[in-house]
Image 1 (cartoon, rainbow, N blue to C red):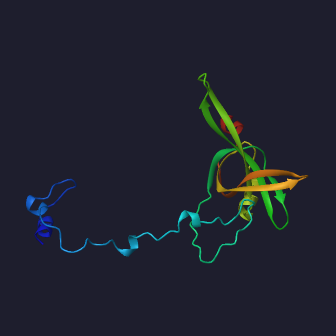
Image 2: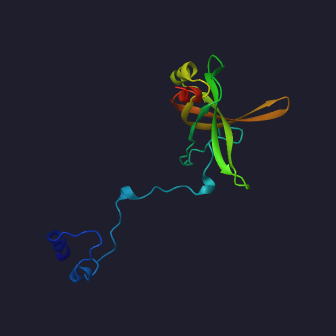
Image 3: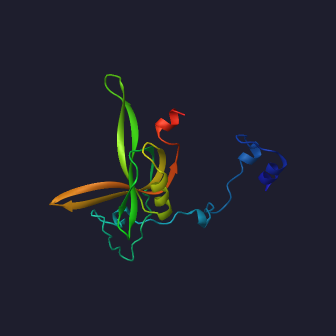
Length: 185
């Protein structure tokens, strides 16, 4: 009671020490107060019970009804230049537009030279409005910012398995045109 009255009558700043009469007060009787229920974290299953929703061949896995699944995140962000004009692919039921973009990473060699490594990424666009926009306006050399998810697939042809990595784009931001257009104006 006395401590609350003292705190109300004086302005206290961060780091200030309470008067000795308030510091030496005994703790209140009984167990310490529990945090409100809203701040308690839900119970999670042990890691050995966490199950994937797809197996290694990317086929759906049946999950027992008594299992609790944890949330996961598959998100990719890329900023780079388009490697070639977009191409229409897919079927009538599942049309898509495909193109590639290049990203770079720089590093120094043992000799101290600055070197640049280029990585190429295959981008697939399935969203109808975004697909049409990309096919109509995206050109080779243009700089783009892409968010989406990474997808692994494999195909077997003539007893040879080909693994493929694609980025399924959810959002694409167009920047200026190709470097020639940017620097020659």
